[in-house]
Each structure stands twice: as structure tokens, then as C-alpha cells.
Length: 314
Ligand code: TXA
Ligand code: MG
Image (tube, rainbow, N blue to C red; front, top):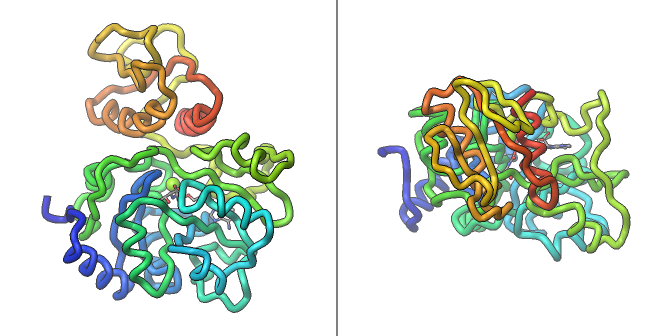
């Protein structure tokens, strides 16, 4: 494919040049693929919102190489540092108070007093961040409310030729978006992910809770319908409906019926997370009209799988 680029020094330089001109590229991260643009540039950020058809009130995550590069933009507290030392770089996003002097485009954080920040682990995106003198705003590389991409081909499936440069980093290792934790005033998990609430409790040595359902959109991205493949999804199914594809999990479902898709035959919940979005996209592209899903265990990253499925089924 002509707009997919492999990892090489030459392509890294190419990507860097595009970003410096305030244009947008697609990049791999360990969670999902994202659309990257200069977070200091209104022009870049506007392009991201337009490409994704994303509501302006839904802020973006700002991606940094290290702490040094973040210090100009946000206030870092003790709790943040504890979590940072344990989980970053990696799949954890922190909501911090933004500094008045920060150069982050106010469009990127929807004019809020806070910014979401993450330090991704994937080698390609890290090399890129290290070589730029601005952080990158990187939302998932899907049209707003659709399924996130976990390979360069998925990005192509979402955007076709609208994205001129897609950096190929193979399949995303985790396959679900990062955990989002609010550290501004209250500590709350806004979005479950690979870093579990237990992992966080252990480091902070205090109780931490998921954000309770409220009408006020503290994390505007927690829109009710999200992660949707565009066909109806029914959860906790015990038997399959007519004309549906069935998503199952574990050894119990060893039959190989054409309409049955096992997220992990070994019953490995991490493997299931990695396969979830790929499977939703595949079923949709095969032309099925609806999806049935059996009950998926609700612990560790299973909590994140169920969160995404629930929103996809809304
Ligand atoms: O794993 C990930 O986080 C991926 C990769 C590409 O890094 N990115 C990602 O971005 O999932 P996005 O834009 O699809 O999701 C960002 C989430 C949304 O739920 C948004 O509302 C929330 O982060 N968010 C961003 N800024 C916020 C803020 N200041 N306060 C509360 N929530 C915020
Ligand atoms: Mg997203």
C-alpha cells in the first residue's frame, strides 16, 4: 500500500517533516493506532478533529517522550510521580492541571483547566517523540464513535487515502485504549484499561474508585455510544440469534463454526483484549448484520473489554 510506511530512519525523518509542517500522520502505539499532530499548533489540532469528525468538546490525549518535556505544560503532584515511576512509559493516561504558560493548543483540551497526558511505549512513536520539540496530540485513529484500529490496515480501513502517511508498527500489543486516571482534585478511574484499578491501588496505597455514572461529562469521551462497529451488538448471550455472528471466549467453545469467533481459545484474557477490535472489524466487514457476545470474565483487563463492549452495544 502506498501510504503505509515501514520503520526506518528515512521514514522517521519523513514523518517528522510532515508533523513539523502541522500535518497529520497515523502512528502505532502499544494500545491502539492513533492520529498524531503537533499539540502546540491550533492548525494541527483542528485537522485531527476534522478527520475524526470528533465533537470539539471531547479533548485529546497529549503524548510526551519524558517528564522533562511535560514539566512546561502541567503541574506534577506526588501521586502522579509514584504512578509515573511504576507505569510509564506505558498504557496509563493522567489527567493533570494545565499550566497557564503551557503552549498546548486550547483546542486540544477543549478549553479545560486540565490536560490528559500519556507516555507511550511503542518504539516507533518513542523515537518520533524524542526527535520532536513539541508533544503530540494523539487520539485513536478511528472516525468518532467507531472501533479503534489495531493495525496499519485498520487505519486504512477507517480513512482510506485521507491519511497520507501511516506508520506501520505491526499489530498493537495491547489492543485496547489506555487506562485514564483523573489526578486533578479527586482520584478516579475515568476509563478502564490494561493498568488495572488494583495495580493503581497498590502503588498509591489508597482506595481508588471508578468514576460513578453522572450526567456531567467529566471525561467527555465517555460518550454513551462508542467503539461501535456500526451493527447491533447484544451482550451476555447464551444462544445465538438468526443471522448473527457469535463472539465467544475460552476452551469451552472449541467448535469451529463459521459464524463463531473465539477471542481466546486458551481463555487468556489479555489475548482476548488484543483480539477484540480486530474481531469486531472483521465481523462487520464479512457482512454480518448483528453480533452476539457470550459473557466475558469481568476482572483485570476483562473490565476494560466489558466497558468497550457495553458502549459498543449502546
Ligand atoms: O491508548 C490511548 O490512550 C490511545 C492511544 C492512541 O494513545 N488514545 C486514545 O485517545 O484513546 P482518545 O482520544 O480516543 O481518547 C481520549 C480519552 C477520551 O475519553 C477523552 O474524553 C479523555 O481521554 N480525556 C482527554 N482529555 C481529558 C481531560 N482533560 N479530562 C478528562 N478526560 C479527558
Ligand atoms: Mg478513541
